[in-house]
Length: 495
Picture 1 (cartoon, rainbow, N blue to C red):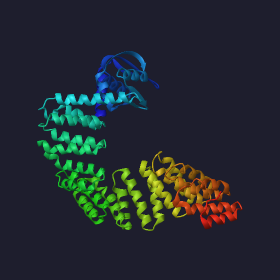
Picture 2: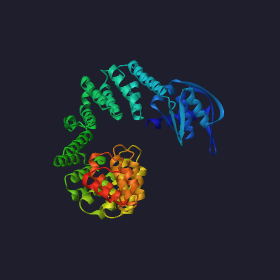
Picture 3: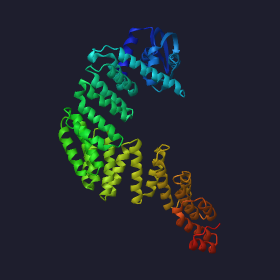
Picture 4: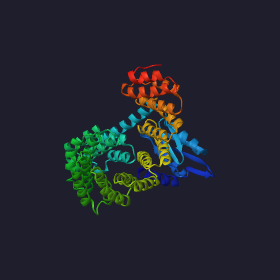
């Protein structure tokens, strides 16, 4: 919303001021300007005329607002104009298609931190200097709200916190503390979010937000895995006058009961939430079958879960929820003993174009299902796709490589399997087990000498019996049968 309003304002200003305009000549955009204004205003107006979107990083806001520039140019290339404006404020402008990003210089953490701190300080000064009786029109509160709406929660947090501390008697004090909690929660600073919410008890205007604050505090506790602290706050939030707050609290309570193994309690909570959300909250009502399906599947009722997931695929308002419903349907139909329907659900899910963790989970479980029903080539393709989609450092990557290597071994594609197991052997946590599989591949490839060299690297005592067996096989393949017998009978390690 904030960006949209800025663009409208910029277009209006540019239309009124012929001294600043952007002309397009084919693919080239030229800037003509003769004006004195802030870097931020200049960039807003130029990007609006050029049909671009401007995004300003939090640490760049103060510099862009406070630095003024005198523009006097005719027919300057758009890219050059953007870089000139950014450099005046000590910033850089990065152009990504039709998006212009204004930020601190890359690789200069000190500059970024200095600019960010200056911006936070500016909000503190603005909050303390603003009139104390300005009510809902308070400029500092509105500035912080705009930053939260514009995707800058750190600046919003600073603005709301300092405003609330400086204006405890304001009608906005309670909402400022609540929104400070929202900003901190958005940043993943859950303890800070709870601390901000505790201040609601200190201001008269905080009483009307008790239920909403209880819900947010519960989410902060739950995010840290402390369900025992979250539950009483969720119970408190279920009595909220605001129906959405009450329903979300009931849903989170149901999820907590499911995690605790109380499936009947979880189902009761979902049924209650469905009754309260009916007709007034269609976006939530449409998602309840998804949660109900999860509970039924966890309680050992896969056929009941199938019905709920099928409903969720039709009623869930968001594509991501429909993808999760398709994933649940695949799991439920497989648990119900219907692999054909499970494969159909897998195809439906992948056709939705899921991304991130949902895509990776779908590929992994699809590969497991394909391998179980004998569709080995399809399983190999799914696992290869999974490895491509998994970012480096994700724990799913080595698991996918291990699954693919094992599948290739079963298909007697030992060269390919050996390459994957050798890569896994470079990981400290998988080295011994992976080397054992490398040795098995070497024996299958009639490379007993190489297998013995690999076995010499394995020091894990828990694998000693398997190492001796493979060592004996390698020695036997080399015709050293007496030594092989000694290894099997005594456990001695022979060259």
